[in-house]
Amino acid sequence: MSKLKGIYTDIVKIRRMVFAELARLALKDAECEEFDKIPYRIIDTEEATYRSSIFKERAIVAARVRMGLGMDYETNQEHKLLSEGIRDFLKNDNQLKEPLVNVIRFACEKCPTNAHFVTNNCRKCLAHPCSIVCPVDAITIEEHAAVIDQEKCINCGKCKEACPYEAIVNYERPCAAACGVDAIESDDYDRAKINQDKCVSCGQCIIACPFGAIADKSMIFQLLKSIKRGEDVRAIIAPSFVGQFGPLVSAEKIVAALKELGMKEVREVSLGADFASLHEAELFAEDIPEKQPYLGTSCCPSWTYVADKHVPEVKDNISESSSPMIFAAQSVKENNEDSKVVFIGPCVSKKLEALSDKVKEEVDFVITFEELAAIFVAADIELTKVDAEEEIRDASYYGRAYANAGGVAEAIRQNLKEKYNINPPITKADGLADCKKTLIKAKAGVLDGHLIEGMACEGGCVGGPGTLLATKRGAKYVDKFAGESPYKFAFENEKLNKKEKKE
Image 1 (tube, rainbow, N blue to C red):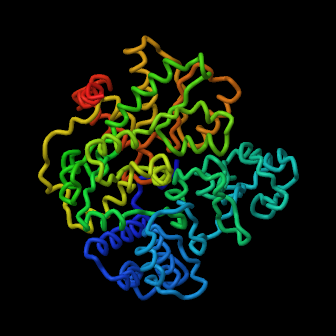
Image 2 (image 1 turned 90 degrees about the vertical axis):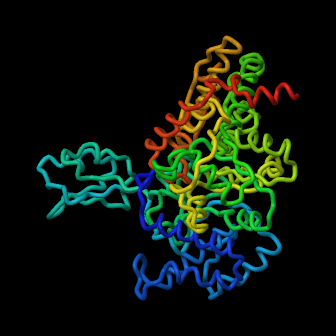
Image 3 (image 1 turned 30 degrees about the horizontal axis):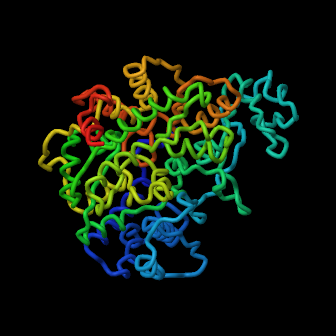
């Protein structure tokens, strides 16, 4: 997990300022030329603050604006106004296209890749075990300290382990360290580059980069324009939303604020989680072990992409059940066929899931909690002053607990125990690297008979790149909100029972 998660840095501030500016322009039906002013409003000083020049700072903001509109960013090798190309994009296309997550190349500061360095904590000790244990003679003891020859070093880490003063540190690119599938590589200029054949769009590299050089595309502008046109837009909001907007902002206030923004209805995605957990319990009871050796859950799209791209031999054992987002969207459109559905959540890869043929007819827009916060700012909606409406009663305790690591598997297991008298062994993959490792174990036959939960973000959905809180704090809010549900199990949920009776 990135050390920057949950810290309000200048990178976060600029990112949210860009989102808020885009939201303001959408809400006031601004002319395209207004986009040209955004870099100057955000970087409004006369001298550079963050980079080598103010022009570079504004160019990076401009690239973020383009990606915030869902466009590919420009390299800015030749001067162009932001408005050039935006007008045609908004008229003729305006939909997200892969790749979703991109490195803004001229924002990358070419961080050194994996290496070991001697710090000034070195005492130049007589024992010098670092040089003794080095298998390639890469360490020499010089006048003031030990020195590592980076040309010889193989990064085995033996010197670091042997140093009694902990004077040797391992340095790795933060974005690469955050990527559990080794999708971060280097281009010809030593800048970070994403290998899209490996990338699973989890977005952890976005929050890990200390220079803000990585960003994903957004649908803020398209969503708000749809609302402005008077279209029937309905929101489904992921269970990790509680607490994300501050301790004084209840779940009911967030729902009321979304309706004030123009949403015709707001529904918990946890309702879809109840659908999903019942369906996957049924699949497990029917298929394991007679038809397949184990069952992997389908909740996290990045987890399923790991199977598709990195361990394809196991992908048939990942449940084909729809994700909670899809189930929730279908429940909205069941009686509102002409409505548009926006998924609001912590996840970047949900944007990619929504582009797939299976989902694009169900989910029209995907935004993160961070993007929603910027929209509230642009719309001058003060959440603490919003009048809360009726109590939210969409989902069960276990449906809401989906947001925390282990919550998906536990919800399915509880349904298996109560409905089928089955209590399967559970394996929980927490974080992208653990997801890949777990799937390799499953491929080897080590996890036969298991129910396997995969979460690409450490801590579960509350650790997603689109959240506003530190993961552990978000998890506490989810636990509390889950405990307030009127139902414990999915099969007790009245809304699901009504649907079953109707069918």
